Length: 447
Image 1 (cartoon, helix red, strand yellow):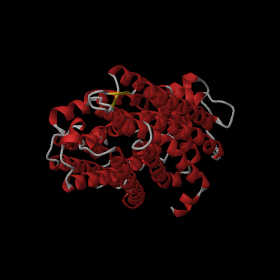
Image 2 (image 1 turned 90 degrees about the vertical axis):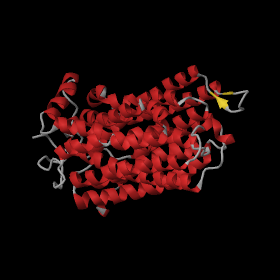
Image 3 (image 1 turned 45 degrees about the horizontal axis):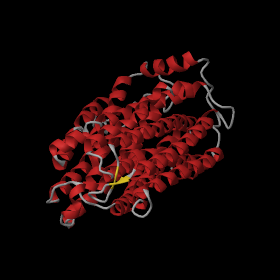
Image 4 (image 1 turned 30 degrees about the horizontal axis):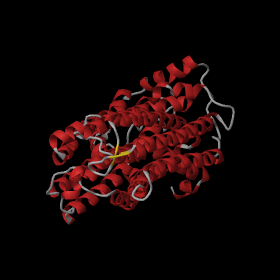
């Protein structure tokens, strides 16, 4: 495993995941904190989580990425570069409009957004996720083609680590920076990072044995679905990808508004998540990669799933320990956060980031295992879209549930939402079974 991780091919592929993780960190962290700081209500924030839909629907245009490409630098990396240019432009547009739309509320003295401005920013965020989803299609297909079977497990852990660091840069670090920099400047700096990522993409090695493009667009659309759904347990795998992180994703949509309503400052949120989250992510992905090798993918999915569900409980304890109304608008009049509430919150952040790193690494290893290299862009997009669909489906109603139940009961309900994923996992990899789909060749053609 150590020799695999020292390979330039694997290392560069890992660092490229920074550009894949940053849009997610922006949409599910910074965007939410920005909206809540500007007085946008929880229901609107929950609805605007629907801007993540392109990550769930990317399989619809993945055949175009499989079939067509620019001549340089190669079939996969040409799409990655185009998407990274679009991402940079999207962040520059978001920065420009945010600077125009933010107005100071005369009553509170805080910067605020009108509802129409929030909707416009949501539309720009939708463009960003569309470009990000296209980048993911090409980057995931590149990963399938460039990695050897023995590299897939260790490389998945490394990819998740850099992906999570990318999320932290566009999430925690951006939020921390907003304590001293204007929000538009923060968004513009994220755009600059995407321009820089183009150089790394061009430096990456081309696949040693690139798969040939489908003969026609029709073949690019039909064959990936025919070969995938012709394999054993195809529907079970699909259902599992939707449900495995359902409770974790529902809770995650409201964590950042929860931190603001707990009266943490932007600097506290950014610093806590940056320090605790980074350490937990690195530890979680490292432990996850080791456990996948030791336990097998099947048993690891059980362990990581329990860890994900358990992590949510710490947020419920933090909400219960905060003996005050949880509303960012009241923070100026409330007592400081107690040591107990602050402690449970920090433990929750550490547990969430560590368990998410482990669970996501295992899901990526599963997806790599079932992909056919001939149709890697479309099949990987389809399977990761199902993973993303669960995130979007659980996120949209989360704001309504948090307002109706209160944060403590909301987080408890999210633990219950993890149960369906375990029921499907029992069919896919029963508790006594070490591996998943052991009879199928890793990343090969379906039987």
